[in-house]
Amino acid sequence: MQYKDYYAALGVARDASEEQIKQAYRKLARKYHPDVSKEPDAEAKFKEVAEAYQTLKDREKRAAYDQLGKHRPGEDFRPPPDWQQQWQGPFGEGSSFSEQVDLGDLFAHLGGGFARGAGGRAQMSMPGRDFEVAVPISIEEAYGGTHIDLDLAMPEYDEQGRLRPVPQAFRARIPKGATQGQRLRLAGKGGRGFNGGRNGDLYLDISLRPHPIYRANGHDLYLDLPLAPWEAVLGTSVEVPTPGGAVRLKVPPGTQAGQQLRLPGRGLPRPRGEAADLYAVVSIVLPREASDRERTLYRELGEASSFNPRAHLSEEGSHAH
Amino acid sequence: MRIDLTEVTWLEAETLSFDELLERSGMSIKLLQELVQAGGIEPLDPAAAQPLYGARALTAARRARRLHEDFELDASALLLVLGLLDRVAELEGRVHELQVKLPRMI
Image (cartoon, rainbow over the protein chains, first blue to last red):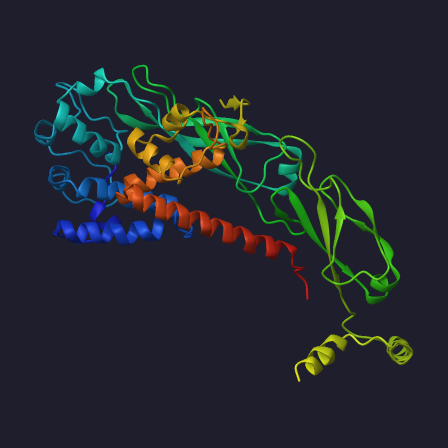
């Protein structure tokens, strides 16, 4: 069995009071709870913190934990010889610790053992655990659908009703139509139920990896379309990439910066129905350096044009007086 | 050897009865009833004789169960937190939408 330092997980001393343990938990839970946290690896960190708190907040479990002695985190150890008899919990006569037992699962079940005595668990039916996994995919994969390989440690019950991680290798089909924040459910593919309990579900939380060209909002896609000033004024036809292949886009004369030119049906496919749209967001860009000839032409243009881009400023300014 | 998983369901496409929502959320019936009655978890059609619940309700119910277990929140606190988290998600969605629509280059 691998040792976990629950006091270190909560950042408290081994002689911390119950109140100090509760305060440390609250502080860390507020920081790492996956429903409220933006910290990287929040879920994994919260799991450690919650596991430590579940044991240390309970006087009996804490006493049992303390009797395991202090070891290095991750160190393989065996409980003292009399520990199992004293804290018999879920272990029946003659049963022994498996090397694979997780310390957190051991203590999670210790409470049930106190209440029901050895063997009580075996009579109960328990549903399998639901399991959620984050699945980042590319925009191209969202467009065409994909398969992903998942190597999970699924919490499952053994014959005695103890939870333990069981390695599972899945290849899951992600159908077309996935996008950021969508979830897929694989019914009954979570942890197995115990003693007739239903199997848990496997949830896949889809996220889209950042893309060098496209930005997704729901199923709509956006890309930047830089235009030279003369292209924006005179109009043009440009080739733009889309996930389904490059298309020609007609830029109408007089196109303004910030305008969005819509390419219907060129966004991501929806699970049901038509594909969403792709928008080309126009920006008007200038060459970093202008040649003498270009300067001359711009000067002539300036002299020939009556366009005042700041007319609204002088009009609004005069209204104010 | 890998197990092929092909029977996937879009959560958004599912509709659940109250009992199914209860089972899938793992919440106690009393707490779920309190949250539904107070409007923290809403059916797809509140006027329906047999209300059905969608992905949004399931996500809220599962989140409520986690917050209840991890922070020992009662129904009143859960209603407040769920409402605030919804508001945060809505605002984050708007910020994201604006960022997506803004050209990146100078």
